[in-house]
Figure 1 (cartoon, rainbow, N blue to C red):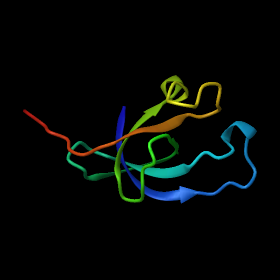
Figure 2: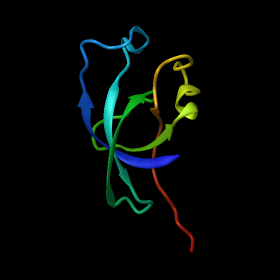
Figure 3: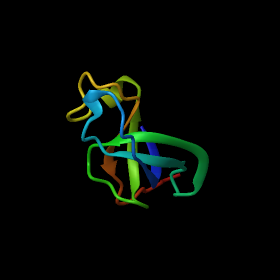
Figure 4: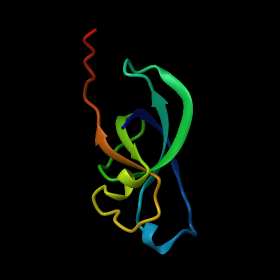
Length: 89
């Protein structure tokens, strides 16, 4: 799983029919403390996340296991909105 922050949206008027109605968001990865990292990804939103929300993203085959995405051509899915991250070192 990957921590990130929603930084934008993607509008695709032409896409695979299995993605019709899917909300696509641009996510910037973050470290556990919330500091931005350099990587970005496009992810299908399954939890109604919004701009600037901290989110939990799954990738690869796990993304296709997210609610409503079985047999859908996705590589990343937002599966949670993060309230807090607690680190104990």
